[in-house]
Image 1: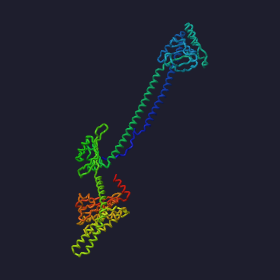
Image 2: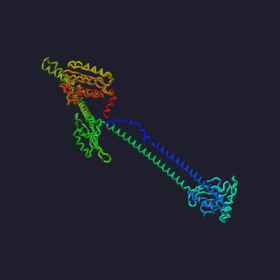
Image 3: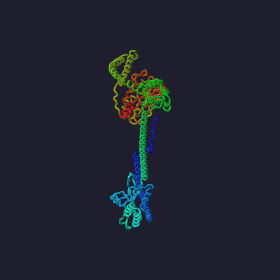
Image 4: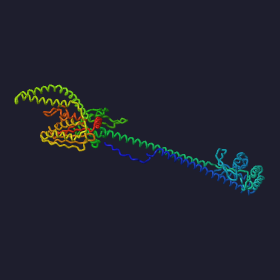
Length: 613
């Protein structure tokens, strides 16, 4: 599976709006609604006052008009005025109509029982300061109801003409006895209040209007405002919560995507093979390392069962996993289609979610080929170290008596006649002593610590010089030498003498492997920014696979006269340079030796650290 994260694009929408913007908008809208509601409340209050004030003024004027009309008739009296007052007070929306004198004593009332009583005390009457124009106030009735009270001086004849009103009151007084006297005292008592029309009646008329319908309308408006404000608050709260949830969802989703991307990238690039199956037992994931180990791509393996790409041992592993057991570093030799046997370390476990349901299986495959190679290299190094120590002791013990043997053989060789059997035996002794001395010298060379003296060397010139040293041997076997130097090769930090010894051994081995002629190819190049590569190839008979892993072992040789130390010394010299030597060979086609030398000691240390990690 490959994960290629796409670039995130900015998404405009509710989820990107800051929370304070939405809250601020709701608060502003709520403030506007409340302000408009308050203004509407005040406007309706003023409108109610205007309407009721006009209604009260109209009722007062209507009563005054009725009184004027009645006074034109000689039969008009208190009973007619009281009846008119009562009839007008029965109209809808009128709570009471009262006429008082200047001291607040009731002269006329729609409720006859209250006539003669006190409507307001004198102090209250003075505080009202009634005038020629209607005024109003809010009052409370005896039964606790609120009334809109309109009042002013009572002017039955208008313009302050009280003479006609008094004559009517006197006529009523004469016609109706004591009740007429009460009315006459109230109706006809007047004083000049300084009005512009001459005299102003001191009697005051009050009209109490019912404000319940208006209050009900105002209460309804208040309720509507409260409902609208509550709806706005709920909408704001709902929007805020929705925004909060959406932002949390977006944040959680983004974190989940980041975590998934991180986990996918980590697993996909692990140096070990990872195979995951789903709950149906089919392959759901295969990383690059697993592809390299099994030889199957994820696209081809997706949806198949693991036994299609894994060896037969998978069935036994699956049975263990199904039992809830965990596999840990089980080493096994596995053969995959299209490849040879691969040593693997297999770990596996069941993937179970929090609810205990099986999600799948996880297998971790670790290729042990490099580990095995390193183990072999360590064992070889240990063996070489032990062999070197032993060789140094043996060489020291053998060389001294060998010198004595050579001296005696030389003495005998000089004393015997030419062609004699004794002289021939002495010659054999000398040659064998020389051969044995050469073996001991190579053994000492192999056992000696590699004390290098590196310096910056032009590797192409060093190889040209080495080729000239073996040119005659190559011509003698009809071998063509092809040197392909890399022109951009930088100076390489090596010990020229020791490195020349290593490449000469490789050249001589190649020439000896081509008895019937052939081509010796020598090529230099830069393998990467860390190493210089030297490639030595021949077209000889090649090395058999069973011998390929032993060629760098001391005293291993396939040549009748070989000592088996040449390639061991080559390997030791290259390792002393912090380099590597690799070999590839095919029987009947030839052999290729590849030497990798680091360009600097720092880069070599970095490369070794990288390999070790």
